[in-house]
Image (spheres, rainbow over the protein chains, first blue to last red):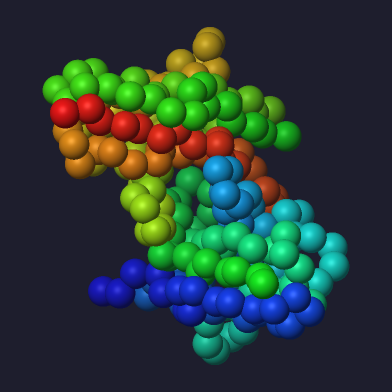
Length: 114
Length: 116
């Protein structure tokens, strides 16, 4: 029973390029969360999605960042025109239900912007 | 709004000694509370969670935590530290209102160092 899958594990981009991070939730999970972890910091909530719907994007930067979770396929976190400050570890988590359910975390994607 | 404060960015204990990692929270509604562990270059693994049942929660690897509403605390303990416990530990809170805000709010983490 595979856990939460994220790819790529490491991503290097130059300033101004686009970054696409993918997350496949655990089998049977329809709730996906994205978090960002800056060096020496805890994880910061970015966005919460269910299939085809964004439920809460209160933690997403207003510009350049977008997320989707289509009916088929993985959830995608997209960062346009990356800047050095976007360098961080991005974690995806999935759960079977709402807040009291355990969120299972993927191994993360480490984004480096040159 | 909810928040989490973890006292001590680094905690060092001797192998076999008591582990105590502190977590205080603020929440406008009864919270759900979680402790996660993160090993280097890995994702987070749930140690234990409090969801308004028993106030003393037992988790994996011998860890437990006690919810104290009067102190707004959820400290993590383990009677006897093992070298394999060296990792980063995160306390997190969710209000679970169901109306959004289902994302977890994390503390900044405590790096646990085990001295041989």
